[in-house]
Amino acid sequence: MTIDTTFQIPEVEISPKAQAFLDKSKKCLIDGKWVDSASGKGFSVFNPANGSIIDMAPAGDKEDIDAAVNAARKVFDDPSHSWNTMTPSERGKLIWKIGDLILDNADELAEIESIDNGKPMAVAKVADVPLSADLFHYMAGWATKIEGNTIPISVPYAPGAKFHAFTTREPVGVIGQIIPWNFPLLMAAWKLGPALATGNCVVLKPAEQTPITALRLGEILQEAGVPDGVVNIVTGMGETAGAALAAHDEVDKVAFTGSTEVGKMIVQAAAGNLKKVTLELGGKSPNIIFKDTANLEQTIAGAASAIFFNHGQCCCAGSRLYVEKDIYGEVVDGIADAAKQIKLGPGLANDTEMGPLVSDEQLCRVTDYMNAGQEAGATCVTGGSRLGEQGYFVSPTLFKDASEDMSIVREEIFGPVVVASPFEDVEEIIERSNDSTYGLAAGIWTKDIAKAHRTAARLRAGTVWINCYNIFDSALPFGGYKQSGWGREMGHEVLDLYTETKAVCIGL
Ligand code: NAI
Ligand code: MG
Image 1 (cartoon, rainbow, N blue to C red):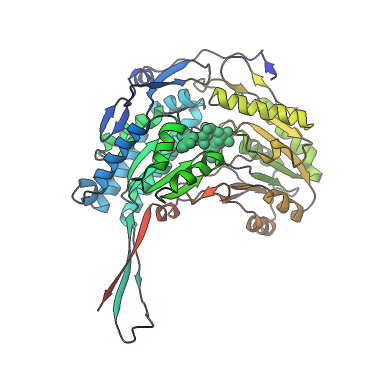
Image 2: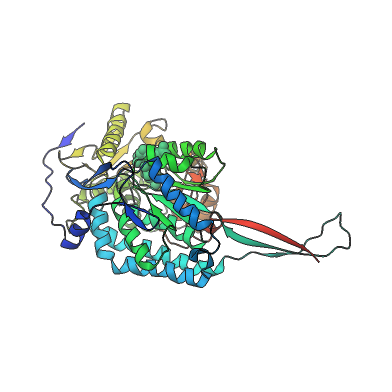
């Protein structure tokens, strides 16, 4: 691996409030109580900017998952429990309050997210934290709008008979939620918001790389008044706590975000009791720039941000950059310049634009791809190395001259690595864009609005951004075609996946 040893990391200071939360002994939240793991074991949480240990979290395992599922089950199965007798309006107000409390604690949440994950605190402040709050505010409004239908029926074998038929929407039950480390707080919000709006009970397992903000969110849920046992949080490894949750017979649904590889394991684990499964998995999203794009400078900035935002650790990252031949050279030069100008550093430094990757494991994974690209014969225009020997920094990287069968073109890298390639016509680029096992997102840049629509309609992807990229909103459904997942997060679409429909038919 090439290492640029000139890279220096400035000293940063942690605020007393964030330090106080880090210093607090971390426990799991089970049945409203903060408890150690049953085994008494813990695992280390690292600061990706320097590799130091910043905290310990309980290493939850099957026994802890059992206790958490039992707590959730006990609430869900008790019709007289306050969670089940609460009116939709009361539930909506409670969920709204979670959003308010997230905003009240925005600075602290952004700081601990930055320390835990490595992302710039300034980004967490304007994106992760307000988006998390907004998700709860948005879902709060839905609590009073979970409606069924009245359905006129004909029943051919009962001529003359009259019926009154309608549907109701009921919570699915106990939901296991397993989330990743790239947007730890926001992924917890995406999962918890709809589950709570529809009246479910939850066991949440945060990623082992980034368990800290989920535990702080647990405190916020308690402060908002979420009853004991409705949301349980168990930290631990995927192979132990995560696997136990996915396989648990008393869990009615598992919602997972992470790698496609583990997504397939979740499906297998869920087969035991045929629990419902939703999956938000990987991507290798094409970002297509036509030569008639409105403003080349803005397009280049947008395409750079499509891959470099959050250090490329986005399932929807625009990692396959396709540029119409006439402007290919100019775009490649522009992206390379943009990559070189990105200021890397620890998330807590004010001028940091890109932090370290989340873990040593991801550092190895991403640098292995950088090496594989070079060994396969692709040209590394810029980047391609680790930065410094401390922390998990890599340089924003641009490849060109790659063939479509190379791993850097086909596989999700989940780092700041983009591969640029020229194209000549629309049909060709639609085919190449769709030539992927993934189908999460895509980008199109053109001022020909008819061409944009025609192309968008043909792309097999859950999200298509036209003349923009990475635009997220609580009201906009997000999820994947093909091996990028099952189901959608956010919007009203997600509510269907947290409710069962009951058809009721009354003979009159
Ligand atoms: P992962 O899929 O292993 O981890 C995601 C979550 O699943 C974590 O909470 C983890 O503890 C849990 N998990 C792991 N193994 C499990 C199992 N057997 N049963 C139940 N839960 C399990 O992802 P990882 O290893 O952290 O990252 C590897 C690659 O996955 C990344 O390089 C990236 O390509 C992809 N990824 C995609 C994400 C997305 O947003 N779609 C998020 C994170 C990773
Ligand atoms: Mg893994």
